[in-house]
Image 1 (cartoon, protein in one colour):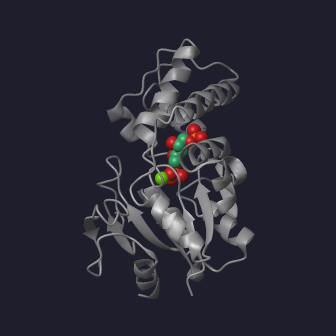
Image 2 (cartoon, rainbow, N blue to C red):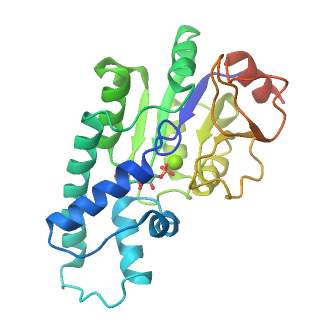
Image 3 (cartoon, helix red, strand yellow):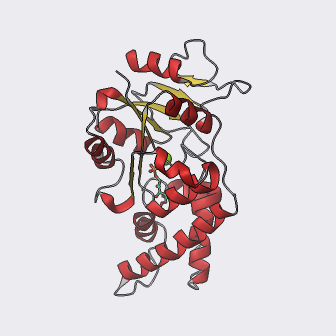
Length: 251
Ligand code: XBP
Ligand code: MG
């Protein structure tokens, strides 16, 4: 029986990477007097690694090997990450990033039907709160029974740990839930936890491998704005609602 929906945040609830996280990283680098600049193209490559601190390390290891590393590199990265979080949450407070099509409608429908809701993301908890507050209002934080985020588990996506953690907190079997993701690292994580997964792609994840997804869509769709099916059976539907999710879940 379908009892709960578990959502990724970045790329799934909102298109946060290109105009949100990337911009905030660059602002943090500038503020620290660094000449690091993450272009849209470079950021595509850096998205291979989830988590902001992990992404900065990956950048230095593979794209800026000539950087003269200080002895306390991890402290420096942690400080940069704090500054980045400040810039990111400020961007969200300005309303810079809207929710993706169908997200609010589906959350409303799920709540009205008594489905349980959770979040499983690699992003920092403050970022989740800021996104929810600035798009759905302060009270929306409480719509989610569990917000599994950031460093709560040591191994970030593609490891299954964050989904395993959320399922354990909710005392639910993976078979009674559906996950919503936008990326290859995301679906590896959700499928690793045994979750059937619905994918909504974005510009950065269009070419990812989504083998095994319940369905791959361009977005969740709205009654007046049909989704496009990229792969899978859309059952003749034009937007994702609970009837459609029940069909996907049962198949
Ligand atoms: C999201 C991420 C995050 C954000 C930055 O991955 O990779 O790292 O880019 O967040 P997913 P922090 O959507 O698969 O969870 O800087 O707060 O770590
Ligand atoms: Mg994502």
